[in-house]
Amino acid sequence: MIIIISPAKRLDIKTNGKIRKNTTPGFLDKSTQLIEELRQFSPTDLAVLMNVSDDIANLTFERYSQWKTPFDTENAGQALLSFNGDVYRSMKPENFSGDDMDFAQDHLRILSGLYGMLRPLDLIQPYRLEMGAKLITSGGKSLYQFWTGTITEAINNDLEKHREKVLMNLASQEYFRVIDTEKLRGKVVTPVFKEYRNDKYKVIGILAKKARGMMGRFIIQNRLRKAEDIKHFSMEGYSYDDNQSSDNEWVFTR
Image (tube, rainbow, N blue to C red; front, side):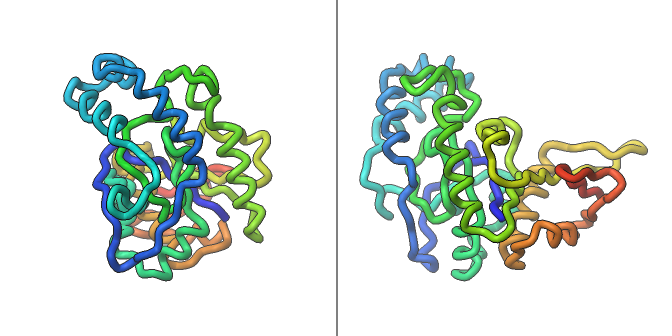
């Protein structure tokens, strides 16, 4: 079983001193190609491309200028520890033991507009590039065209190493779209988290993000290798709702 999550816009590049292991992203050649193309953009161009403020565009421009290989612990940090969004704060990877991180390295993948797909211990340098950005490159008319074949093949290769060929989708729709599910050699299961509000169940974005992080932590710290075991997820009041669930969409409510 492989779990996928989205990256976070916020980054706090750091390496966990307790966990000295680190690995190199698998597609740095393609990342370098994107960086070279993005360096042709001015801060004003980046603000328009990414629909961000001038301050964020200037910071992004500076990060692209400073981005360089090779990566090491002086200029890069472990991916799972460096993203700083709701999913990651809820997952709490800074509290993972070495064994937890080893399990995550084998089972967890982070999708990325710049890096394609990352393992938890892959070193990254700071960047901003969302998968949905309307970036035309020499590799396609969008980042989806640029990355879909590469990422789909990489997930298939990872699934081949596991007895249960299940892709547990904890990513946002923006990032999940990069996977060609017709070519995926495994079953996709998407957990959905709903809150009871005003006499009905509905998805509340920020709470769903936190729940994805909690579920990721639940899977990793309990060493779950079978998808069915995830139905026992009960953190912070959630429970599996069989009546609202389907074969490929598992609903958890509270």
